[in-house]
Length: 275
Image 1: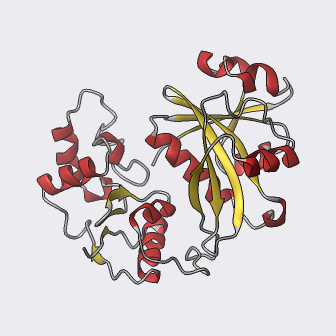
Image 2: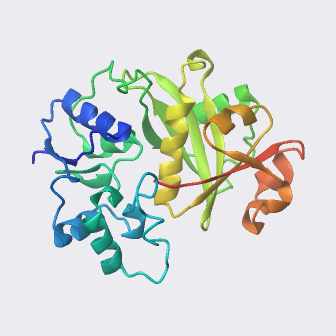
Image 3: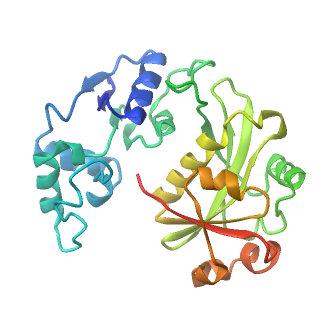
């Protein structure tokens, strides 16, 4: 089927997703949903098909979300859908439907889950920043262990922690790095994030970390935590904030990385995961 994108040309992520679809030769049908909103049934079905809750499909930043009191937990899905149709800017973007399924493509790389066509090797974001494609790997992958050991990051608990791990490559197929997370209910411990030495200084962490956070979000996490000795400034640029170790939730304190592997001098950082 011809891909369909609910597009907002004022949104950088939406522009990047459209760029990817067009660069892959897919000729998407572009629906400017703020000008021609879907009907309620179509909106509800699209959100359901994307595996999301209605509340998760709401956009808060740059919208009348707060003024309309949409953070009220007493509002039903029908209430929220009606609000989205009254103010279409509340519909998060971009939703994409292809023959492989539906997804809210935030970050833009999520659209690769819906694409079978070859990806041009030189494909980048509209501003020239890198794109990355992720691939789930086992905790026992030797390349993961080697990269972490080279970076001085913990490896002894890789296979026992129950984490989910990924490798990352740019569209040209060149390895960019690795990352993983442990789900702890609504929290996630972000760990094992490393850019391979030969690719450092290329801004790849700006692509790797948001994609990793989205995978954690889809696994149920809404707050991300991490420990770092060497890169707090880099993670601050990605909107993580430093917090005191006594603010860590109990499940995080119980992890081996928190309790034993990372020294007390490591910075504890936190970020709300939102789309």
